Image (tube, rainbow, N blue to C red; front, side, top):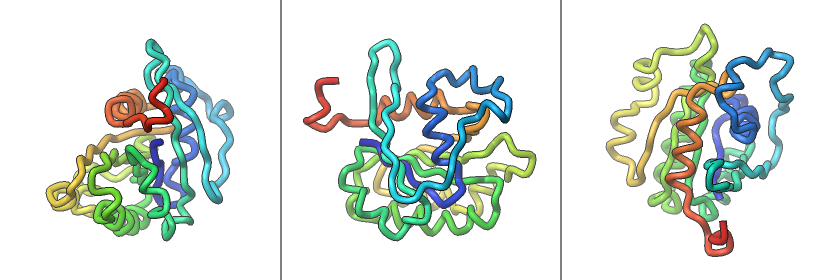
Length: 183
């Protein structure tokens, strides 16, 4: 199972629905009325996405609401890969997200779990430049000291930017559990 976490309002639910839609290039033409409706996740949300259409490889993603940050650690042991989403148009959130990110990266149960850091909402005019995000997150230090592999990608769940990279990363980094190995 792949775990999807991040602060409240980072765009996790729309990202998950956009990944489930699967045709990322078509998302670029979506009008605002065509976007799937989302509400803040309370609790968890399980969704299956197809990450390789030709081989029909499906992965279950568990989204855990941002307000549940204090108990994310209860879901680490079931995760074969972690997607961590940050809204990079919200300066206050980026600063707070750094603490949650460091807490997750230093947890013993995530030591060998690959992490994809998603810098979401690239479509907004107030998006922070990547250099500013890297500075606020102390990204170079964070990545240099993390025991697990951490990759970073700029995405927009709204337009589909970068979602093909996310799907490929999930495909390459998700490990099937013994019960799922029939896929």
